[in-house]
Length: 436
Ligand code: PMP
Image (cartoon, rainbow, N blue to C red; front, top):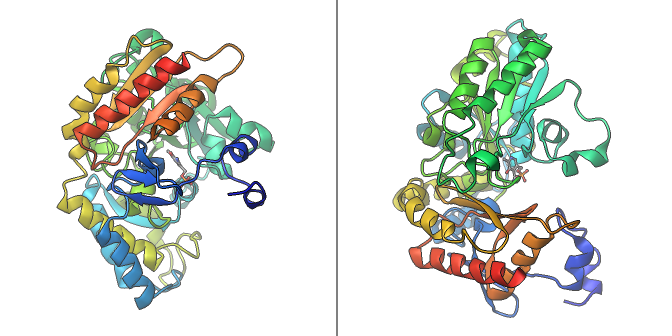
């Protein structure tokens, strides 16, 4: 494409000037691979953007979307419903921890986060505890880009340009602790105590002002931070002790990434609200959802029956194309055992990834299920540049990875075979060596 053809599109989360000098274009996708417009194959090491869990262009999903577009393109979700939205919810709650029995549809991870935060606030108000308005996030947390999400999020680059954010938000400390945990395989041994930071905020603000705590079970966008053993259990205990709702943002961990359908199951901790998106439709059609415990839903159901209980929703909530895509996605996951496949492959994946220990500048490696992070020492005065150079080298070699700061993140489609894992790690080895 010529420079003028690239001009009008202001790309999201992209270094636009750098990109437009040397664009990386994708034209086709099949299974584990993308193809460039010139026909060069690129192995997908990140499932698109942590979403194409069943691999690309799965026939059943493609067909379901086409059929649905012909049958019914759109149905309003306000005071109206359509059968596939109900069928999907029934099937979803069979996959979640049993206590999460209700599904509210959105169109993205960011919308799921806003929805969950609003549910938490409205829940406390509906049960007469309207003083609970404070939301607690975590440093280095990523919860999408809307105002609630960047407020509870803990990434300074996503916050500092936008002035005052939501009032009454505070953050617990993050769990990245390389001094104690570098090169841990799976969950790090040290750091359950970091959850006690929530007690500090309870002491500071008083529990009666706190509505909810939101964390990603595995922080993805800030460098693949695996929860230390016992950490999430401890957060759950502290929330229970003080009547605070616990929200898990499972936008990247949902749908098989950590070896179970949800990280809540992998780590054995059930949140009160859980946000998902991405893998819900295998990334084919935008869709997100919030799962809620029955007790949260029921609090809203006490008023007169003809009145709307929760004033929230989107024009495209439960979009028929998204519901059809999600149903076909769940079929594909079930038929191929994909929601537990990460657990079967995690030993092989971990061993391959940790073989990069000892390469120049590699200062930590982290993994769980089929998600991995390789952290590089930053170049002096150029944070993120070394990892970005590895990303560019991998692209030239025919591998798509993602970087966040100086961490290389991997989250391949769950259909991955061992030979793909070998290829990913070999490509990374070459790239890290060359960039050094
Ligand atoms: N929460 C988490 C944990 C995420 O990783 C993401 C996206 N990577 C989001 C929310 C936002 O999702 P979306 O980009 O679909 O709005």
